[in-house]
Image 1 (cartoon, rainbow, N blue to C red):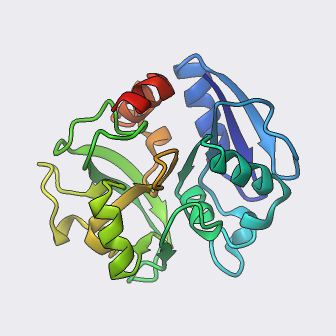
Image 2 (cartoon, rainbow, N blue to C red; image 1 turned 30 degrees about the horizontal axis):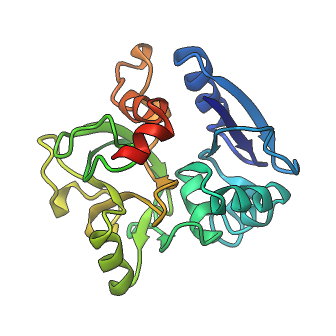
Length: 234
């Protein structure tokens, strides 16, 4: 697959993502500057973590209006695959490519530590290689990670299996104590109705190298690399 990693002013996880995709997984990767007006024929666009435009106004609120986002939105509407991680998830919500919003953590503090998440369904590109109910240790690093949506939206997400990940304990059990940021229903990641746009707060690219002592995030990339054909058959 050919991946495109968007670089916004303030992105700080773009090179981490490029490293994992290119050096660890052997994929073709191009960096897409926020002022670009084309996607260079990529198969999947990644919106990485960081502090795009300094997180002024709201996290992701300004990045949503970057020139490249016009192309990203068109790509998504045509069925193109998009993965937003942390700040990328916030941008996707601001662009209305994903429902809901990411609010300030209840503590109003930046949280940077390992968290445990479990997939809820295998019916998506990013969860295809995971085992629902099995805990994955994936780092989080955010100040606005509390997922919020209306009751109606939550019902739709649950009914359509659009909730992909929930925060859990080490045994894979979903409970309030395992929720690091107050997200409704322990939600850590979701997808759109078309199942081609994915957003999550934890950072799988920070858990995909044996040098870091954690490769749990590799499972998400393995699912992606099995390709759209597998996704269409799930």
